[in-house]
Image (cartoon, rainbow, N blue to C red; front, side, top):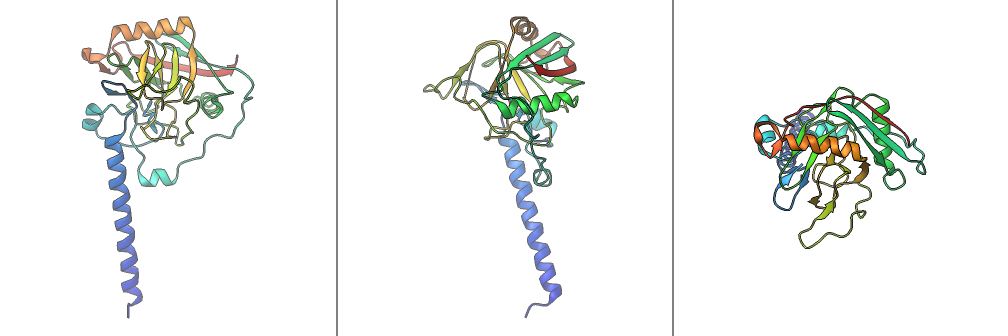
Length: 264
């Protein structure tokens, strides 16, 4: 017969083993995460957006992994995942148009959002902008090979940050059916959500496409830049990433001082 003390020790041991298993699963997810994947390179989730990342999930990743990986965000730890907050209550008018305006150190960047087709994404961005979530953040990642995107929206600035909740994927068929290579073309001027590489893991990280890019149709396209904004991002892309790398922090830092979302 098992005593009460033995039973308590057994339960404690089982609980510890479950925690260890969850932590190991989280570590494996961290190593697998990607923001966006081009046909020739795995890149940008932000991300993930993506991530989190965050590409939507908030999380931790060591610097070695961050340098070697194309992930925009790390997977949340089990404790963080269990306490993930719900996405903001729906408050936008789904029939109205919305515009997000970013005041950056490289000029103003603005894009319209399709609330009818991406209500969760539009509502989340308005909620975050109204709270000043994006103010004082930076666009932490530029990719200049394979795909051509500038990634922003991470409060941590290292690809692992997010708002503490995730939103569902939306509008994934908008760019057509994937070709034999599994990709569709995200046209220059498109704004899309970064994620962790798994469905419905968008958070606050997003990427601005400054040149036609072929990607899997798994990243919510929710906005379109105006001509002046596209030109501003093209100039950032032309300057390249730090150290001449094809993927890294922009050589010309892009700091967001103010973000606002208003009806257009």
